[in-house]
Image 1 (cartoon, rainbow, N blue to C red):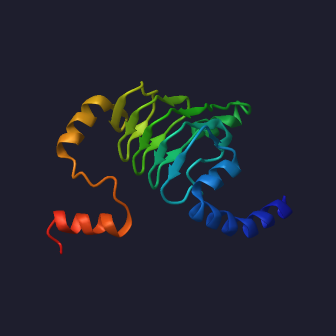
Image 2: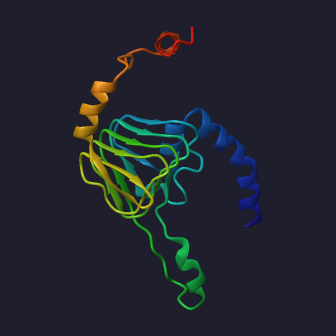
Image 3: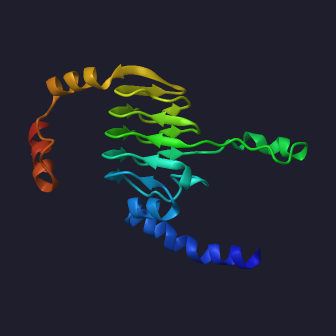
Length: 178
C-alpha cells in the first residue's frame, strides 16, 4: 500500500500536466470511451471522477472548463458499516453534437442525447432527450436546439468561421475596441 501511494505522489504531477496539455488524450488514457471527435477545454484531470471507463462520449462533443462526470453515488458510504457491499453507480453516455457548459455536473445513469446543450453549472440528474437544451439545478428542459438555432442565427455576429487574430480583430471592430 505504501508503494502504491508513493507511486501516485510521483506520477500525479505528470498526469496533471498530461491532462492540462492534452485533455482528450488523457481522458482516453484513463478509460473514457470516445466515439469520435471530442474537444475538452481546460484540464481533464479531475473531470471524470473514479470510474472514467463508465463514460462514453459521442462525436462532435464539446466539454467546457470545470465540467464533471460522476458515475458513482458516494452517499452510500456512511451505511457501509451495516451493509458493507452497498454500492450505487451507473454509466454516463453523451450522444453526438453535444455542448456541455462550464461547471456542469453529469450524474450516474444519465444519457445525453444527440444535438443537445447542457447549460453552465447545471446538475444533470436525468437523461436528456435528443434536440434538447437543459439548464439549472436540477437541470430541466428550457428549449429545443432547433428553436435555439433559429434565435442564434438572427443574433449571429457572423464571425464563427474566423480564428486567432482575425477573430480578435473582428470582435474589437464589432464592439468598438479598436
